[in-house]
Each structure stands twice: as C-alpha cells, then as structure tokens.
Image 1 (spheres, rainbow over the protein chains, first blue to last red):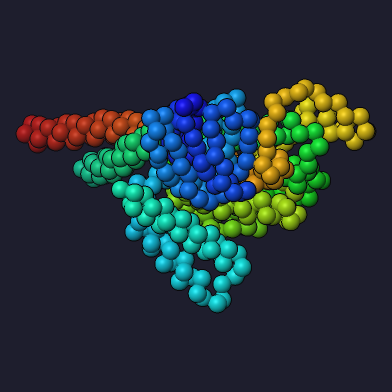
Image 2: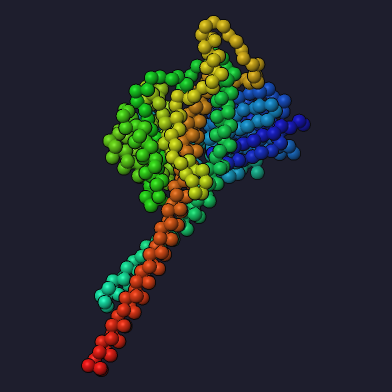
Length: 139
Length: 294
C-alpha cells in the first residue's frame, strides 16, 4: 500500500515522524481519513481518537485534542494541542479529572465560563477513558 | 588593633557565606538553564508550522476577512508582561519594566503580569490588572497559556482593547538577552495580501499567483478563526520559554560576577587582616624591647 510522511508535533516536541498508510482523526467537521495522494488540505482538530496505520500495517491509536492538521504536497502535519498515545494514558488521572469535573458541575452557583471549562474537562477525561478502555480490550 | 582584626575576621566570614549562596545560585541556574533551553527549542517547530499555515491562508484567499486581522484605532492596549518571580538576575526584570514603562506610560493600558515581579510592577505604575491567575512565572504551563490566549482573544473581539502586545526577553545567547515587545493582535497581514484586498475593493480582482490550492474544511475563515487562539497561546508560550531561559542565563551571569567580586573582596580583606596582625606583633615587640631597655 502507498505510504506518506506523517509528522506529529506538539508544544512539547515531536511525537512522530514516520511513513504511514493511513491516518484517521476527528476534526471540527467530523472524522476524516487521510491516505497517500490526498489533495492539499487543512482543517482544525476537534476532540477525539486518532488512528494511524503504520507502514507495516500495525495500528496505533492516540488521543488527539485541538490544534490543526494540514496535508501539503504529500506530507501530512498534525499539530494537536495535546496528544497522548493510547498506551500512555494515565487512567487514574483521567478518572480523577472526571470525578472532579462532575463534582464541580453539580454545583449550581457555577458561572457560565466555569461551566464551559468544566464541561470541556469532563469531555477530555471521558475521551481519554474510552480510548484507554478500547485499547485494553484489543490486548 | 585587636578590635579591628576581629572586625575584619567577621567581615571575611560574612563575605564567605554570601559567596557560598551566590555560587549555589549560579549552579542551580546553569543546571536549570539546560532544560529551559531544550524546552524553548522543542516548542519552536510547532509554532513555525502554525504561523506558516496562517500566512498561507491570508496569502491565498483574496476575499479573506477575519475579526482578528482587523486593525482598529488604538485606544487601549493590553500588555502581557513576562518577568521573573525573584530578583538577583542582573538587569533581567528591570530591562523589561523599563521598556514597558516607556511604551505604556502615556497610554491607557491593561496588564496581564506573568511572574511575581511583574505583578509588583503593574501595581507600581498603577495600570489595571486583567488577570491575577498567572502570578508565578515558574508554574505557568501550556494550559495556562491557552487560558491566557482565551482571555486575550475574547477581550480583543469584544473591543475591551484594540491591541495586544507581549513584553518578554529574547534569549540570544548565554551572555546576551534582550527585552522585546511582540505585537500579537491584530494579526499582521502579509503585504501582498493587503494589496489584493485593495484591488478587490475597487472591483478588479487580480489573482497574483495561482498559489497552492488547498482545501479548507469547512472553509478557510472558520479554520483561521479556530487556529488563531492556539496561535496566540503558542506565541505566549514561546515568549515564556524564551523569558525563562533568559532569566536563568541572566541569573547565572549575575551570580558568577557576584562570586568573583566576593572572592576579590575576601582577598583584599585577608591582606588587610594580615597587615593588622603584623602591625600588632610589631607593636608588641617594640613594647617588649622598650620595656627591657628602659
């Protein structure tokens, strides 16, 4: 199968620079799959799972939140705000974040801004947990 | 004479203990500096790509407008002042403050101070502080930068201020750091893009170059407006990394020269001490000789 170069960079440095067959990730418009020969393309990233089919056919998954993706002249750059490989998700921490966010959201005196902040936190924690449990089932 | 000898001895002791502290601070700064430099370098490629994408969008879309690029007459400016939490870093803090004072003195300005010293500075020049959230520069993380970017973008869009500027320190080399002002919002458009809008306004559309055709989903403006807050956060984070590295480098240099000065002082004081000691001995001998012959 044809491959293309995928570079994943975050603020903390480079996560991946490799030849891959396919990348699926969640953008603000829904899931997109990118394969070799895709036209020049650019969009912003939402919150969700990213699946990468590596050159040898193995699949790696990760949590991919915020940022942007661009495909330019056959080279794909994924610049998420946060990226975590499924295997590296700290489940205890995500559960703690979820519990905290739920606790905060149950308070009625929350301002609108705080509510939005906590909802986003809850969403992030839930995505982390669901991806972590998915990857554990596969094993 | 014995009194002055004791005084000098005490002085030597105190300078020695000061030197121990300055030496320790120098060592701590240089070990932290390596990490800070790495952090600054790691974050760079991410923002270069982000800013290139934004530039591409403005360059290739002739009918492009975004509230983030709209230049308004400047009534109020918001300064993000990045300084340290502690002093003893040479001119690191005061250089940034001098620059901001010169730029903001006559204007109506808001401040977002990052670092304890910056907070004190904002209180001193009596400018309203927009957020106290980022009091400790050492603890400011990526997510804090995103929170700050959100405040800035929101304030800018709602017209609370017409301009956002970051005051930080550029890390040029281990021995050289320069304070700088970085305008963030409104985003500067490319020169040729401005030319294109003018042409568009007069009804004559002249596509300058075919450019690379890029598919934006759902459209270039939405993508642009979604990326801008991230980009602003990126700029802040980049400036913060540079500043932290600068602070450590400045502290290292300052502490190095302080240790050297202390060593020099100890040397002179030792010389004085020996002189006083010798004078005391000579006096005693003279007294004894005077006693026997007399």
